[in-house]
Image (cartoon, rainbow, N blue to C red; front, side, top):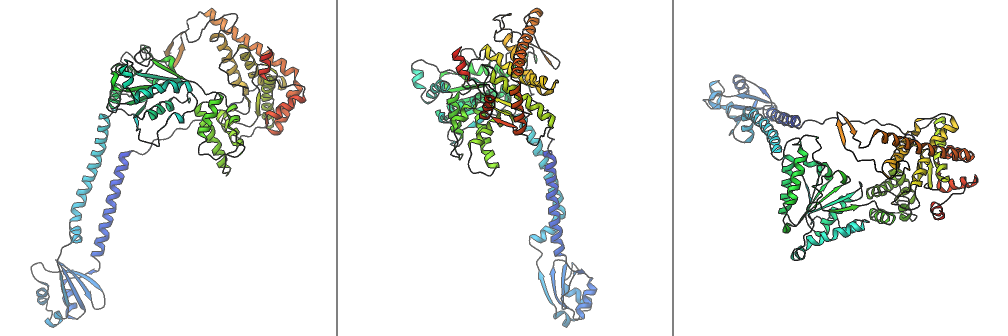
Length: 634
């Protein structure tokens, strides 16, 4: 399987809130100044003349009307022109004009209108030059104090809980057990929690105490958070959810303060459920020497332990937590009286996957050919989150092609997209690279088809998907919880099939086998150190028995076995890899004609489905074997 590297891009910082507010202040000020200038311009229209000129024009019979507004004179001429002037403060206009020698009969012919200098416009024009700068100053000070007050209030609220609260009356966000498919045993365990929250009296009267803490353990995406919300929805109680990482801040004591505040809110709303997601962020084993004795994370954990023990039987507050790393939790956290009930949330089996698919299919229009049973069979190892993503990607593919219904072909393509990433048809391989990739994937597929304990091949493709230049899709015939040593050995040989095919056909090796080598080596080492499948070392678990040493930026494993045992482990891993390599070489060499046929067909069509692949095998004298039949024979 070929791999490509991707570059990460970082987002730049956004605009500062302070400078944004300051810009708003100046923008408002510019608008006010422009408005003032516009009003003043309209009020002060016309040419300004002196009183002597006005007297001369009145004497000449040119003036039709004079409007007096305080000291300002607005003059309208018979020709329609408008001019301005100012009168003397101490005397009336008629007296002033008479003093300038204007005849009485000429003055009587002019309409003089005296308007009182009142109104909002008058006061605005007169006071604005003094008031606006003061208002601007106060506005700037107000924004500055608001920024400082916000920062100060944020400092005072550091100790408050940031939990998200889901009300039982919120019908849109309410989830019940009907919305959670699979995990039957987990739902049975949680049913009595719901019963306690609904009717705690019958438990308390008989002397029974419901567990204070429930720890949901399982892989990522299996529905731990969904189960916790379903318990709250079934019981009809408030649901307080928070992540373990939200407790820890750079300030000392903030995490413990948030824990106290969270439990206080929950007690006030009792009966209620507190859900702490990813509790391993604060619940790791204490005393590791990392961060010192007063590590903020340890102080937060101590407060959680105290709050759990401080519960009284009648407080009706249940604490639920979720983690996919239960092995790193502090023993004090999982002792009786705290998180003493541990519920395992496994990956769904085939029937559970079908139920989950039907839930996620709600609201999606399907074509007549859609068969969710087939989709469930082709998705072993998928979690609930993967199945949701599958259904969503199928709908997106249908919408992208402007179709109104989701077809079976869309869901099949969505499976590969979730597993491997989107196809990259724009990534064109050269003719030589295409040939190498075809033989590489044909080597995987041929080894998987001949080896009796390998999973059957469902699809082969040399179209780039995700970071891989090509892929061989193998799926088991049934879900399994256990895997045997023979299956592991065949899987390693299948992983090396591409490596062997490249070396045999081209006499050279490429970087395309790097991922296969990593997988096969890690699997061989697990067989020796974890599963006890080495005859030389015997049934001894040698992994995760030591601690870890932090040295600078490196994490070193502290092993509790000798260098001689370490050398024997390396020797056993090499032996397993060598035997699998020889097994793959025998298969590829024996069925060279089949390898060429598969590779040539891949170069021609780029993708081979299961039915066509089996026909190619039969044409080369290889009978596709069903794994179950072989196991029954043995």
